[in-house]
Image 1 (tube, protein in one colour):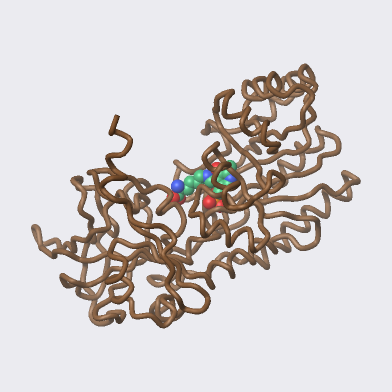
Image 2 (image 1 turned 60 degrees about the vertical axis):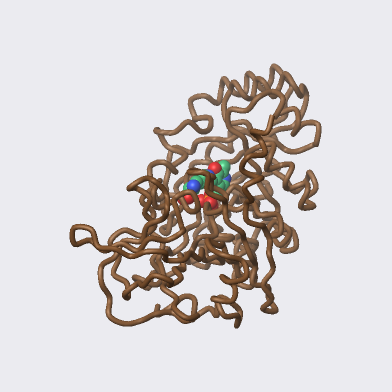
Length: 415
Ligand code: LLP
C-alpha cells in the first residue's frame, strides 16, 4: 500500500498541519467512517445464530467513541468498576454490560451486583466470594479452553501459562462451590489472547469451549472472547486484513455441530477490543530534533513511550508515515529510528525503519494507534497525556478529549 493516510483520505479533506496547529501534538486522531465500518463488521461476525458483539472497552475507553459503539448497537464488556461506571455514563444499560473481572474485591463485585450487571468469575475463589455476596443469583464463569494465542507472550490468556480462568480439571469443584451458594451459572466465556491473524487456534479453542459447555446443561450464552487481528504491516508489507468471511464460514460450521448435538441454541457472543478502533486512528507527533549517533540516525519526537507504550512494552510494530507541509513524504528511503522525549533508551516508537528522510519540523503519523494507545498512556516523566480528536463523517474535527493540564497532574497530590 502506498500511503494509508492518502488512500483512506484519513483527515477528511482537512490539512493535517491545521489540525496539529489547532490541537497541538502529540494528538490521537480518529476517523469516524473507518470506525463505524469496523464496528459493523464486528456486529455481523456471526450471522446464522443469535449473536451479540461485546466491545471490550479496555482497548479504547473514550466516552465519545463509546457513544458511537452504542449507536452501532454493540454491547460492551468491562474489566473494572471504572469501566462499568464509564459505560453507564455513555448510556449503556445494565443488560448491555458484561463484567469480566480478575482478582477483584468484594466491594467491586458488590457494585456490579447492586447494578444488576452479569458477572463472569474466573477462579473458584472469586466464584465463592460472589456466591457469598449474591446467593441464589445468576452468573457466568470464565473457562480456559487449553489453547492460547496472541502477538506476544504477555497477552496470551489461555493455555498453561496464564493467571486467567478455570480449567477443565477444576470444573467439579466449581460446580460444588456454585451449588453451595445456589448460584445458577447461565453463561460461559473465554478469551484466549490478543491478536491472531490466522483463525486456527481460536477455532480450536471454540471447539474445546463448546465441549466444556456440555457439562453445564442449557446455557443462556456462550462467549468466545476477543483477539481478532489487525494488519499492523499494511503499508510496509501490504499485509491483508483479517478475513471475516472465511472466518465466519468456519466458525458457523462448528456452531452448527454444537447446536445439533446439544439440542438448543444459546446466544453466542464475542468480545473484540482491538479491531474496533485500531485502524481508525493515527497518532500525530512532531519531530523536534534529528541526529546521528555512532552512524545510527534518530528522529526525536514528542511521541514518548508514555503516549504509546506498545513498541516499548511488547516490541510492537506500528507503520509510520512522514508528513511535511501537509503532505505525505515519499522518495528515497534510509534507515532511521523514531524516538520520543522520555528518559529511557527504550523510548522508541519505530526501531531502525526504512523511511524517507525525516527533517526537524515534520509530522510523524503512527498508524493503527486506536487500540491500547491512549488507554495505556501515562504521565511518566510528568508529561501530559495527549488530546484526542475525531474526524467526523462530514469532515469536521471534533475535540473528544482535551490534553491534560499541569493542574490535572498535580490535583491528586494537593492534599
Ligand atoms: N476480553 C477479555 C477478557 C480480554 O482480556 C481482552 C483483552 C479482550 C476481550 C479484547 O481482546 P482484543 O480483541 O483487543 O485482542 N495491551 C495489549 C493487548 C492486551 C489485551 C488484554 N485483553 C496490546 O496492546 O496489544
